Image (tube, rainbow, N blue to C red; front, side, top):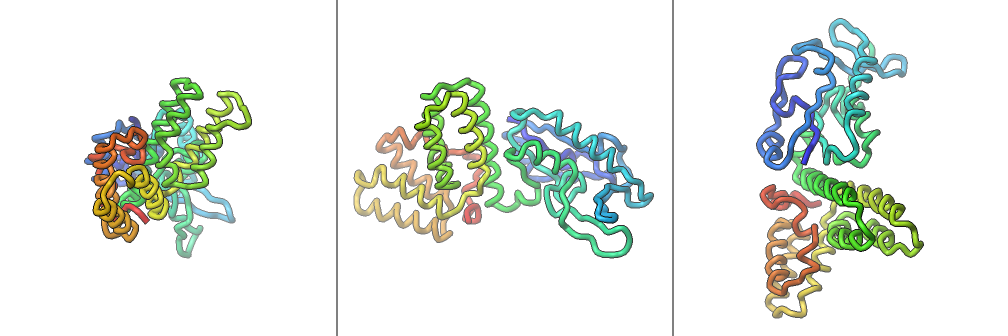
Length: 316
């Protein structure tokens, strides 16, 4: 699986000051699961070290210029950013991690300076990041700094793996029956994102309007990508867990029911992490050989070694 990344986050000395911004989580953990394709718009056209650049607002117009010589380099930065984004195909990457606060790669809160005296405002978007998000609005994209938040990290990586799945699935030129199977495996993961999306995707698969296979697949792919881009919530996840519990509650003892329901409530109250509940559920899924649940991506959306559900803070 390929994931795009700002070059400096890999420990490569490409920043304007000759340094890097090596990110421990990216370098030590994500490198075990992904192949990186790195991008550095500034490094494509300027040597390292070099004069720093910043976004400046002059008479309402936003330009990019160097900090010391005040040279306007807007065209060069915009051109190289467009060129790099154009070199990426829709299904080449399954996600992207950007360098925060960078005038080229920051996805939000980039400093915009006034022309002269005055305070900067953290309201800008990096030039390359803007091009990337406009061309691929549903590509999973995050900044390295935000991935220190367990909730954002879990949502981002869940989206990355689902994004890869839908593109790989569509490449197989699936039949209606295979679409039903794919959708079935993602039902509860989608439900954990949005009940509205859950119902909408189900209606697309049901195809009551008798659309062609090509139309259904195109619409399903679009709505699926929109759904997985949503952030999961504790309340939705709790509802999914209750639905899953319903599959085997009639087969277990009163004490076992109480144990599971207590665990679900403790998850809802942010006392225990989701992984603790999932482990209990998987025991009963295996015990009663519930094939429908064994297929659910919700229970194993990414490699367990990532341990993304092991923190209470991973859900809000």
